[in-house]
Length: 288
Ligand SMILES: Nc1ncnc2c1ncn2[C@@H]1O[C@H](COP(=O)(O)OP(=O)(O)OP(=O)(O)O)[C@@H](O)[C@H]1O
Ligand SMILES: [Mg+2]
Image (cartoon, rainbow, N blue to C red; front, side, top):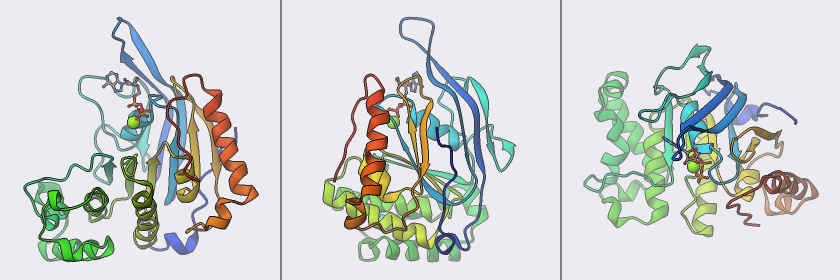
């Protein structure tokens, strides 16, 4: 296994707030329906110590979302998480949801009763963020972010008046308006059509350039992993172990010519070989 840390481009990450996230010897077991326990994650150790886009791939049900939640200190109700091992954020053991980490999901979770502006501004209704950011500043941040995601002219609309891609832009804006050190994305573009997904990938690259942070992005899409990632981590089938972990050095945005290059094809094959090595490999997509 080739373990490597993201090769973030200095120009892209200038001004980024750095953060270190380490998961060490993580084991996660869940109660099994038949009694006893099922081991979902088996002694996974990973460290992230600079801004960068880190892609997490693995067979369906192998434990990607479980691991992603752990990286932000989020624990499911009623289950001890992790069963053993530790999650360290900036060197401190993480005991609960971490303030510097935000998540974006496939189901964008926009409030149907609020306008686009109020959906993006929603975190500032919460005590923590109200006390951290003065009102004039958060209003400015929301306006700037709406512009950055191309929704400045839609600020007064409701989510039902937007397309799926536009709704995902709202969710992304709501996350980035907090200037998170850690951005966790769980198949955020998985439900979008191919063209919208590519638009969202380009948008993420632009947003990352303006607000670089530590991104961990779960995907089923091998092409998406190669077009976006500074680093690609492949998990094995359940119980998940790190099956591969490598750096992609090509600068973003990556061209169609690079996508067809021997380097990209070789990396694609490397990922597919790992995923195919896992019995019950589940859903994998290649969008080349
Ligand atoms: N709170 C929970 N209690 C019991 N089992 C759980 C819990 N959360 C997840 N699991 C089980 O753990 C396994 C891994 O789930 P997880 O959602 O992390 O996988 P995943 O790789 O994200 O899957 P997918 O690719 O389908 O999104 C699954 O078998 C799931 O049923
Ligand atoms: Mg999942």
